[in-house]
Length: 199
Image (cartoon, rainbow, N blue to C red; front, side):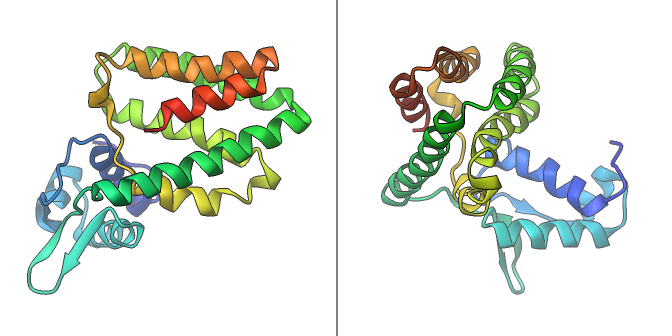
């Protein structure tokens, strides 16, 4: 596996995608040496990546035990997370309707084209990356990106449940419905499509 210049960020990105997509299940242990061999790098960047993901809440580290994937949030906590994420993203969509910046629509259209291709393929990691990028584009467009710092910790603690779909193209169609409503200038419809998508 080829990694770019910042090894720690690249390793963290790969592991994050695996965790959020469910490829690495809760309580799965992650060992520095095993990962170093997999990525073909020294243990230093691996250690830094694991520390970074622990700070994000995706991993849990215990002295003399090691690092493992964090447990999924309880039903109660997940409901709180869903509520908070909906509020942040809905606020961003509402703010967009105040400006109707065409640049965001172009970026969302570009993302949708890639997302459709990814959802039709077998690379779940790519699906996760494009899914997160789609929502981040919306959040970044509001208030000069100030909501991202609120949104990102919420997003990272919400395991993405693609299993609720019969196939991944359902997720693509949900994204497309949001963008279609934005193109048509229908704020209420866009907000409803967004809220029904975040579950």
